[in-house]
Length: 254
Length: 307
Picture 1 (cartoon, rainbow over the protein chains, first blue to last red):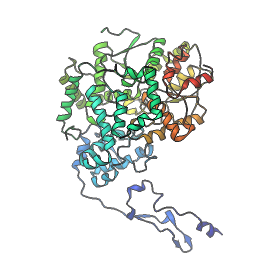
Picture 2 (picture 1 turned 180 degrees about the horizontal axis):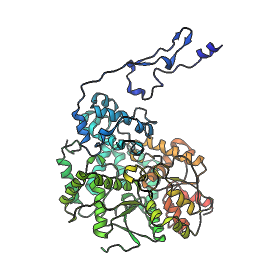
Picture 3 (picture 1 turned 180 degrees about the vertical axis):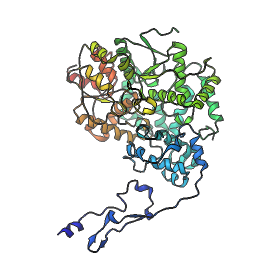
Picture 4 (picture 1 turned 90 degrees about the vertical axis):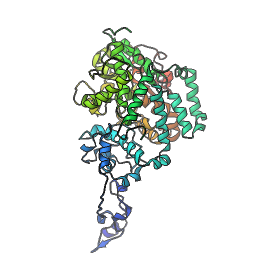
């Protein structure tokens, strides 16, 4: 009777129960779907094996590059406890987004592995739960910005193909914040919609209602009065020169 | 410009509050004035960087600190009060970083020198203060109680703090200074809402993220997070959600029709700012508190409750 019950037990997918399953290659997981040894059913997770892996020849200069930036200056402190991933807002929605693993890859300079995660690397929402709970004050939330810089430097082609939207939006922000000194939310919204090819949505009912409401109560016109801070050009030039002369990966011309 | 008197405070409005979030701006000023502090806008302010400039090294710190210089230079005030949580975070971040790191302070000062706008160096002696924390510590809950003429009895409010008001403690120093709000379980908004007679509900998503930062690139994440927050608050019996951040309003309020379209009627709940509710309780009209500005239509919910 007992044995019959065991037979009906649903068998898990290969390695399904492993946390951060995506970090292990498919071939490295050894698991027998139906395995009975001496009349005892050991199917599923009981017999899972992960083959050990040897990685070598990493670029250690990479670590320096990250450490020299403002956002990545605390990378040496991380001891891989995984609190950042455990508290992350994004990880439950995108299982492949794993801050701990990203920091580890950056520490090692493991570009080969990092390349696989270009599509999810920019999904950080900047909620700072990880930085709040990190026992070593590594500040993983800002480390994700450093990750963005690293990806931009080493994989420019992938960034162009996979992260085009993100880069375009960043550019709009840059132009507005550095160029004008103030953020025009209406212009940001419309130009972002244009860049992402969703101009049609602006004519949809929901968008139209919101725009009409703001025009009616006068908020739409307050944007025209937003203006620009006086003497902003001197600040803009000073910041531009600073960004041009940097010798870290934050350099705007790199 | 004249220097500030005793019951005035230098105020950084930020880009959102002067344009589409004027409800928050106006109600903050009304409430503060009633409680005995006049908020004076700093002239020529510039954008704080809203978290998009972080990968630009010391330039990300120069932008908020230029406003601190303006407050000191033009208004003679070391401290700067602001209502937007994102701005608050950027200011706290820059000040905490330059205090800790001499090199970064020097780099920022080099940019200040090159820009040549102020004749002096920046010294990190002032603080950036969120309006909620400012009013709580400077005026206190008793002052709110004293000013309440129309208590919001029977209104159930879900307080939503969002991310950057209390986190991370390495920048806000919430764990080192007892007068600051708790990072994991903030209380100040609860205390204010209870002081104006409203009832607060516990729904578990008080310090969750709204995903507002990736609203343009990654709508789906933001919509999912917002719908979780709204439906939890609705389940707990809340009539409205109270906010203290215009970015949260962008995600929860402005996009609510889209969220409802995707996740159903469970994700529909009026959104208001904390200061709007306080202004209403202090005897200002709904028009003065600009309730009509919110897209999620809190006027209807308030009418049903008899306010």
